Length: 166
Image 1 (cartoon, rainbow, N blue to C red):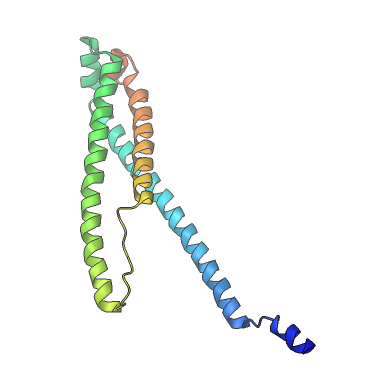
Image 2: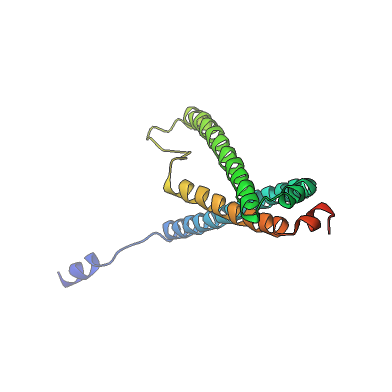
């Protein structure tokens, strides 16, 4: 009976199952890393696009802004006007893209359900999530900071510098 007690304490584990779990964990971590890098790249790409769009616009209307400043428009007013325009542009763009993502996610989710025929209620696309809201806030913050830096750099010049492109 002593041998029976010792053998009942031994747990047998299949080496193949352990290796499958390790592989799944590795793939899971790699997927998270790639997703994070794609999100960071996307945020930078959005910020650079809006930044270049803003720079191009401000360089086109520099003379007009210089004229307005010569007639009494303060730096603070001009900066707040352009920052408000950029905020509206960003928020409208995010709202439209949010709606498109919701519609496409719903359609693709239904397609997955019909093709895969999985009986449990798995969510393939989850837009209303804390991570989504955090990423939207990061996109807005990064874009506002980059826009503010560009607006400040261009609009803090004197009216003469803006008009005569110095």
